Length: 191
Image 1: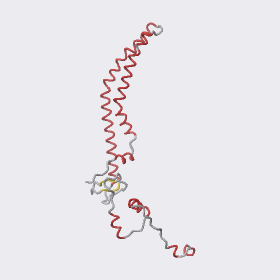
Image 2: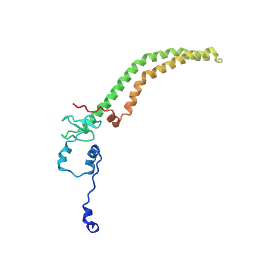
Image 3: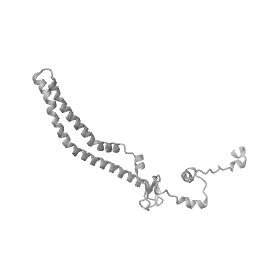
Image 4: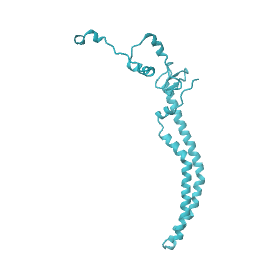
């Protein structure tokens, strides 16, 4: 039916080629299925990313640089598994750093917790005095609260300073994603 409606010349028309740039053309070659030129076919097989690109990974089997989005290297090594192993090692390092920082913070917090006990007499004495004498709390009794509150406030500020790095690493562990790994991973060296 198509032959009857359109002349033969229309059926032989091919789309015009548009020059976009080498990188874009290389990406679109696999998607669009452009016509192959025999002399460029050999060149196309050997296209590899630049080693300093964030999208490059060095194959553990053959040592060649390959695109990170490929499942298999050209030597048939499983690149996607290698990248996942790198991600799991990166994530494990984040957890180990967090565990180390948490242990250090806990060790540093022991003296601070004991120093908070120094505030207890200043907080308990006014309460005992009001229970024992059942009078209205005079100003002198109320002033006993002030040193206790200052000591507890200083302990809270010191605790925030000590646990700041631990809290940041905990947030990094909780929000770690594969996309973050890809942006933070070190580009492949030119070895």
